[in-house]
Each structure stands twice: as structure tokens, then as C-alpha cells.
Image (cartoon, rainbow, N blue to C red; front, side):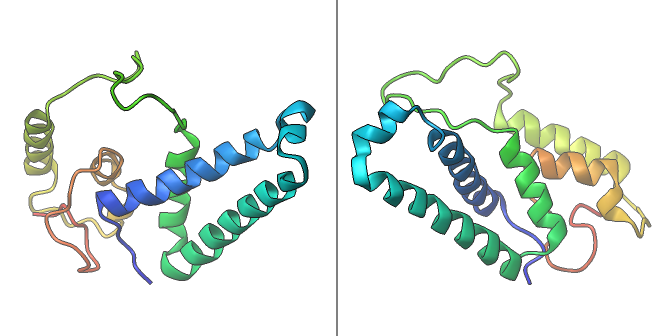
Length: 151
């Protein structure tokens, strides 16, 4: 069982989960949309079923329950947005643009102030660990059975 996902792995899985959640709402479309697909509407429903099965069983076999819940929580906060490739992203007032270098500096300061000489045994419950994971700050070390941010 893999206990830690890197940012790209997590983003890929979240994208699939968001797509699955979006398919749920699309399949509840108006009867007119269903008529457009005709007899192939059942194929759409079947595709959604297989996506759900693959995600549910595949993640259960590969990840621990805590990581699965974390990914589901992230996916439920996301929206599936379609836009032209040449188009600008839709403005979102909840999102603030912060340069990557500044995020890295902020993370470094937080880790230096809170994680140096840390002795916590319950590091999964630590506020710094939780915030770093939510912000997708890469771990300093992985798969040691200990907090990846501990210095």
C-alpha cells in the first residue's frame, strides 16, 4: 500500500474523481439530452459505472483509507471547467495568484519555525503537516514512516 502521493499523482486522481462526479450530474440531464443519444445513453451510464468501479476498487487496493478520504475531500471542492485552449481561465475571487518562489519561501519559513526538532508522534494531525499537504508542498523526504516535513 502506498501511503504518500506526489503532487502530480494526486492531481491526476483528483481529476478523475472530479470527472466522475461531473458525469453523475450530466447523467441526470434533461430527457431531451437523453433522446439525443438514443439507445447509446445506456453506454454513457455504463461508462460512468466502470469509471466509478475502477476508481473505487483501484484506490482501495493501492492507498490507505486516510489518503483516499483526503483525495475525495479535495475532489468534492473542485469543479470541472471546460474552456478554449486559447482562452484565459475564468476569474475566481477565491484564488490569489502567488508566485511559486514565494510559496516555496513561505513553506521553508513555516517548516523552519515549526518542524525543526519536532518530536510529535501524531504528525498526521499536525496543523503544519495538514497545511503543507493541502498546499501541495513537496516533502523533504518520503516513505520513512515519519513526518515528511520534519527537520
